[in-house]
Length: 193
Image 1 (cartoon, rainbow, N blue to C red):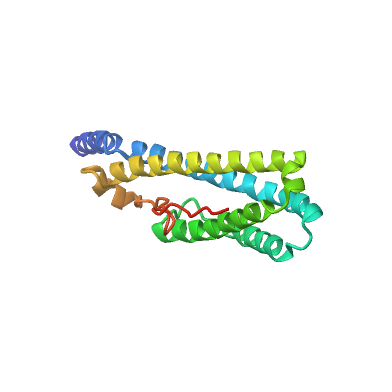
Image 2 (image 1 turned 120 degrees about the horizontal axis):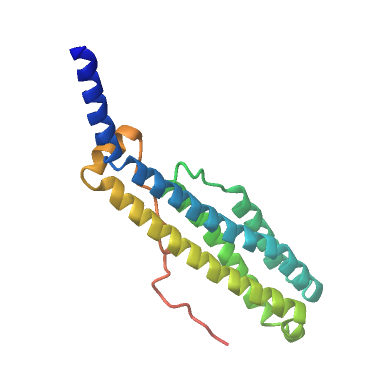
């Protein structure tokens, strides 16, 4: 009887300890990070889906810019092949994903610059609409990346704070990676006409 009572008391203390250990908080914040990551991927997918339309529009008006168009198509293909497992959002995985997406962004920028040479294309309503969609998508990507970084900061703070850090290690919660500014983004681009 005493042994059963002792087991019941130990079980109650264990349950109370585990309920206040932060496990549920860490799970909740981990799921929030995964949800924010899904939104980042959603924004990048939207951009990847818009590119074929933009390329088709530009091809119709600027056939001789084939190398620029080809670079955009290839960068899109590479960007859509890179995926990150939401359960492994490490610094390295995020950096690899970001590097591929940055290359894609650069090719889009070159395409938009080449369009400046074609006034009739710039005046094309379809192109203007696609360009506005791309600009909006880039803004969405920025917003989603910021929201993801905020969620990761909150998660990482929880996981690394005492006493949660002890429980996080026991249950396999690890700090997650964040997006960082692209190399050279601290310098303003040169615009010349």
